[in-house]
Image 1 (cartoon, rainbow, N blue to C red):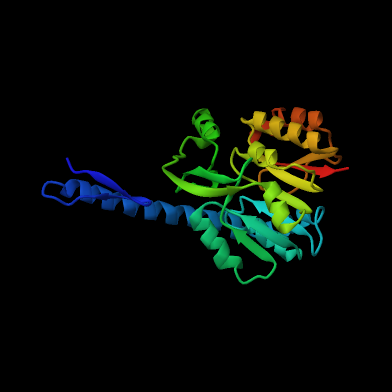
Image 2 (cartoon, one colour):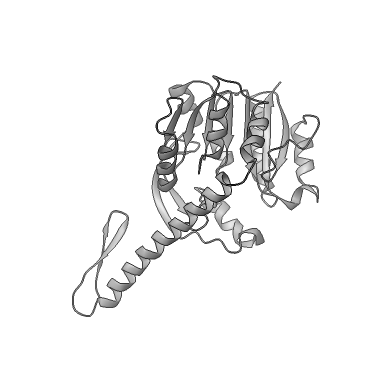
Length: 278
């Protein structure tokens, strides 16, 4: 049988007689990967940039937390719709994105803006390198958290998702970002199960932040809440799905927001938890 030797990201098959099937399979695999990546990129652009009025709702939401000139960290910037909203409010934005295709997209969209810095890296509890688990057709659920990925196998919302590729990426921490860029007025975190790790790399309170939650992964929420109240006196609220609207008419403590997210009504859809210092 022909040997396989590593050549960076792709495997190179020898082409001796009898190996044509392997060569064909390798080419087909590369072509499928390109197709899946194109589908995933197009899907994200459609979801996050093509829906009317979404940017207006985002600006209305974030204007409660930031003002012109404020520094914002967008952790898991993906297709850049939140970057776009923060920039429209006059903020300086540091956009972190570990997926190579989406880091390229962010540089293409915002590379000429003097107020936006794109960093191609993940954010974790320690700086270094990590293995990013890619879902090329559904890149919104690409993750560093293998346990979180494995737990989604029993989640019907993820029934059609396949994590089909792994890439090595650079990682940094919130503390390192603060040392480099300054203290942000707001940190948006959307990292598919790595939210507790991101907050573990934060050693001081920041004025406000948000992190994503899944109804069937509230243990992640509890870990994030525990970390935040250890850092400072935070209050909490939440938004459902992509409504970009705070649900509660008052800010809650950690136990209240966790209890609310456990109710049947809140269990229907994912969303984001918002935190602010008091």
